[in-house]
Image (cartoon, rainbow, N blue to C red; front, top):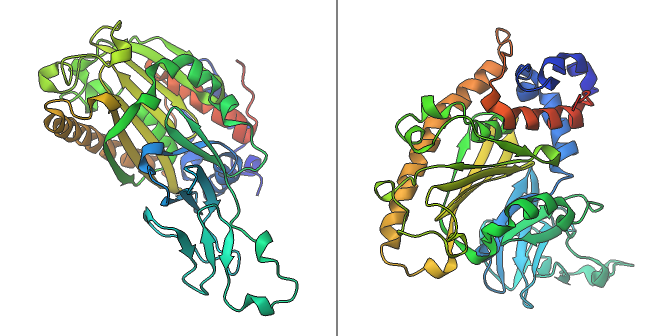
Length: 382
């Protein structure tokens, strides 16, 4: 079924208007199985996506598995120290050759025992010498495009995709000064939300809800609602604003800015998004990163990373400050959970009619216009 048969493009006219005149999008885009299937093909099998930090695979032999809209992937660090990505699919019958994460010298298919090395080459196949014309040297796990930006591992399932350097060019220009390649993970957690992936993305962009849902956890730390945003291609955005530190009695976590931000005020903060699955919040003393993973039309896996400068690994009070920060972060996400899951129920309701947007929802509006233009060819008046 063509998407135009699911929702005629004229249904998006109110959303495509300038933000101060616009309304939110129809609920179908968050609840239609046909639209979700099209998103998989058009977005998640075509775009670069952040999947890990390089420090999560520090040693030769390290590997981790993941899924992108159901497609199984394995990341490896080979004996030369290079990172690789492959389809986690045996070239014999298709069984996954790796599970979970760990360290190994080779992958053995659990079904028939075919062996692959860390570079994806077939190095053993029992009894296949009897197979006429079979060339083990030409058989290997299918490679997946992999690139690294500022300590982040990105993959792309499209063999003819644009270079990662081009994909992240705007982001590097705007936020490369944050030097995430000089940072390490100090905390990480994940959760599954019973809602469409776009609702999770939009919620993280939404400054409008902070003074309501996060009245006790965030609102008093953010100066005001009138934040200036700048917008980039593919629905990306960024903003710089003032926000009080969130732990340590509302002081900087370790009483100082990160070394490369010493010229910034203590309440320096930014927020930004790079479609389709990567969002970041920068502060004077740490960085919080979110990645989004659709698990179905109404289920999303959210992975949250907290980063600190690598040179702070042994700083006094680190464990206590990290624990305090993680407790506060989990509280914020728990507050959001009820709202985004309620939103999902509304999107499938015949009673839902999209309401007008607030100017504070500018990033949501920008992302929706990009999405609707890409997915449905909705006219964008600019």
